[in-house]
Image 1 (cartoon, rainbow, N blue to C red):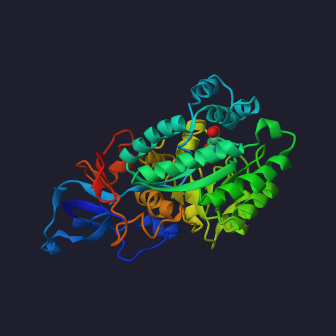
Image 2: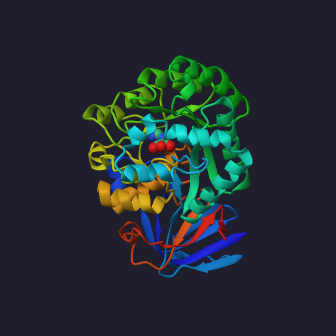
Image 3: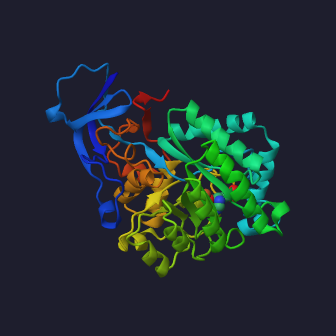
Length: 412
Ligand code: NIG
Ligand code: FE
């Protein structure tokens, strides 16, 4: 099946040779091609170029993209899309003056979601989660990482990971699974933290590895959650079971989680709302991708990751949604890109690089996703007619997407 998209006003994120990520200064440049064609063969990008050099081909399908922009799908490297119910009441409680921390301390927060998850059947969790997955696909996400972490019991964590696996089997979008058993200490282990960590290491991890249910291991390294020492212990165990670390750090406090992640060669360190000069220094010249989650900052009214400082220091940055019921009930990458520009002062070029190629890196798929490169997946966004790609962050409340391609096919 050959699809020709012709007369593309501007083709974004065009990379002749595959790069795995773009750092600091490189993020300022978004390579594009004006008046372009793009040829898809089955599920892959076959060719692209200027309309002046359009080769003679017999296409099964021709799409005229006059006035429209084409870019690679968003790569959302950090989500918690699989959950049960919602936390609307906590949202209203926060409006009425309670903090996220206060709500968590009285048994709400992650423990509230864990209770709901353990009370809900696997089938029902799948049904609820698939609607969110379908929604984000229509919003232009072409690859997504999904975490467990609302089970906090052997059975609950396995149930979540099985739901993630089933989603990846039933949907054409690329899905990476992350085991986040260390998301919070369950109530029955409140006074026996070592006991819960032992449960993670001796019961959950072996079962997950044996059934190949996860690609990555995550820990919520934060005051009141998992200490740096506990985080290291879990990363070390995860690595032994073949899971690369990708961790939550520096959401509320800088306690050394970044340095721990780097020590264990974490693929990414995510959140980073609170980050010190030493943290930035530590990230230099490492393979660990910093990931910012601006819609979490927006929803909780907490600081935004200081993107300018980090980019100035030469660091790469990726952007993701953090879609979850507590801190970010939104999986809209278009909003993330807009918020990064509006609140974090990233340029549109930097934000699009961060949400495509660097997002792909942060979930270990930059060889196949994140740029318009021959041989990569034909996962694309075709916009409505727009004046320029600046509109993507500028018109922050509009849906500018006309169609989404996943594996070379238009999403119905
Ligand atoms: O990434 N910070 C830790 N975990 C999630 C929120 C979890 C929740 O509130 O349910 C996050 O923001
Ligand atoms: Fe998260």
